Image 1: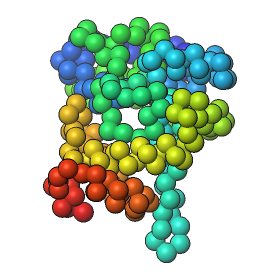
Image 2: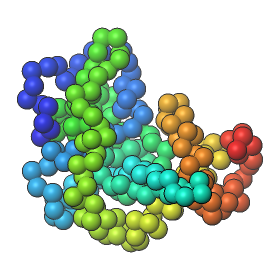
Image 3: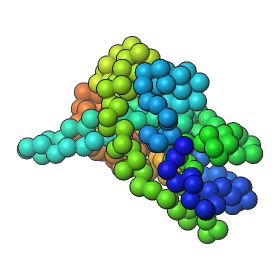
Length: 222
């Protein structure tokens, strides 16, 4: 599992992580790479999603169109599930990994997703990667149709419908400042995407504003 695991280097240093207080795991669960699975098919995907520890998530593909218009489409892959999130979690405020326990990751190094294994602890806490995470995510391209079917199976709606619903719920969380359990770095990352999201999903943004119970600082700044 994981193409870098055979290299002679120290993947895990719990002493460093203990001092760091596991900041990366508190920001989000780690990504699964295609190499983490011997077989990727309907049966294998259902088996891992049914464990309750994994979610179908997405990265956002942003394309510029004519007349300053943009579109955002989801690109699907798998990630260790975040606390309080569902098996289908296409877009949300990321939270602590569900597998993070008092003594660290509940998974052994052998069973841990490669996105976490290949994030190497450093004494100065400037942890380094053995890989390009975006390049590894792109390797899920041949399995998009399969993952789309998983969304339909578990969410009982299309990817487009679920993504729009997740966008709406994200807008509501941001505008109501529902940031409990979300680290500051993640909040900054999401806020940096807010302009693009509101441009591409104006109806959902207007609906979110109507749903909000208060006029937040974020709303006033837009």
